[in-house]
Image 1: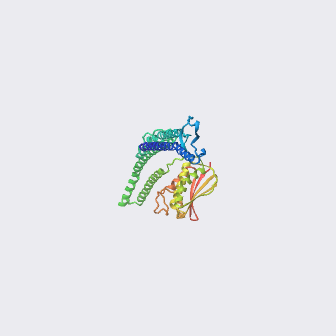
Image 2: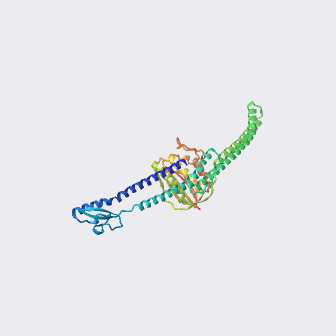
Image 3: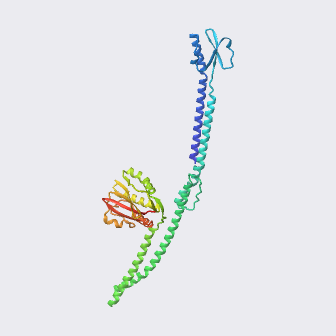
Amino acid sequence: MKTFKKLCILSIVIFIALAAGLNIFLIRDENHTNGIYRVEAKRLTDELNETGSYDLSKYPHIKGVYTGDDLYKSNEQYLIIESNGKLYRVEYEIKNEHSSIFILNCVLGIFFILTALLFLYIRRHIILPFGRINSVPQELAKGNLTIEIPEEKSRFFGKFTWGVNLLRESIENNRKKEVTMQRDKKLLLLSLSHDIKTPLSAIKLNAKALAKGLYKDEEKRLAAAESINKRADEIENFVSEITKAASEDFMNFEVEIGEEFLSHTIEKIYARYAPQLAVTGTEFKINKYNDCILSCDPDRLAECLQNLIENAIKYSDGRRIELKFDKMDGCELITVSNTGCTLETKELPQIFESFHRGGNADNIQGNGLGLFICKRLMSLMNGEIYADIVDECFEITLVVRLA
């Protein structure tokens, strides 16, 4: 706000200085122009002295020359000159520049008023609304989700404040889900821990009895061994439940099936990655396709394509990334292909597992969740995803249903 005020004051000072300078220049120029008739009268006198005649076309500011009885008969501006002992009345015309200066100042005044109104508009509709929401992102970053976000009807910040409100609600909902998830997880772990104690105690008792040779009968020893095996199976089931509960955390995705033009999705992907890949010298090729309407969640589909292209950028040799298209059985097939594949074919079945990283991921940052997330999202959108290696190119295809 202070910077904006300084900018306004500086603009006003510069405008006033320029207007004053221009007025001074015009006034001086007017004085110079108004005095030129004297110069022409002197030249006329010299011409009369030399030739005894004159040519008025040479003197644009002189309207007429009179002598004799007409010497003093005039209501116009004039001056008296003498040539060869004879007096002459020289009528002259002074151009009125005051009207031009007045018009110029009127134009400058209107421009000044429009500039002031523009500054006021910017202050009211941009500076002040921005100042009211300036601290909101910082408060959200600190975890203050109760901060009040003022409603703005301005076309400049209306959508922004609406989006920030949606962001706050999303963060708040995610926090509630996380708290609920942590509570349920803790209850589950406590319950499973309690349930595991019973078979574990039975295993320990049977193991001690076998170790001390308390069972002399072979049949009792076999029964004890079978009991240990049965309890171990129970513990294995409990561990499976724990593993399943942990993996379900990563599968909690929300998908809203709608309709989206294929061209809209591809245009967004191209706009996002074409400049980046051009800088690195990677060819980003998008093959021809027939536009169609897809049945999907547009944001989630775009997320899947972004994950695939990000992987292609990380694991390719930087020569070419290509998007291919095909149709099959009422579905659109979108294939992301990159050159320089170093992944082994035997690893393809595992690449969609959570936290799995291929043998080509050495020294490359990642968590092994990108393709896992893509597979889960495509499944929720009634689609599919699969990968293949063709001519040393890694190809991964999204199968999206047509609307």
